[in-house]
Length: 83
Image 1 (cartoon, helix red, strand yellow):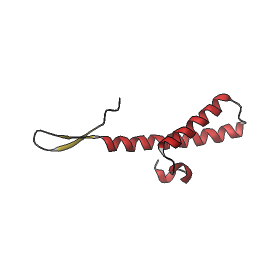
Image 2: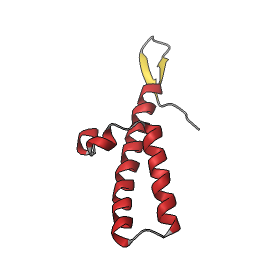
Image 3: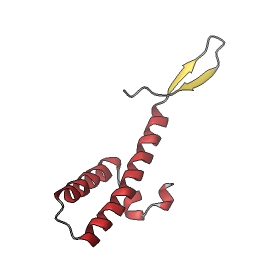
Image 4: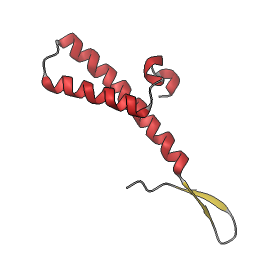
């Protein structure tokens, strides 16, 4: 899934804003007070927000991949270690 396949309001969100909205949705669903139709709508939006956050994280990881130089001078990218 690409940003263009997400609703424009979600695609425009920063990672932090999308995560905050996803956390609000999770809290609402955990409370169990939403009507069934609302719960389904929240779940669907939460799924899209999760995908958006995952894409943002993948993009960020690619940007911070470490560039290494081999003994022969060849450049290579090494996956970032974010743990």
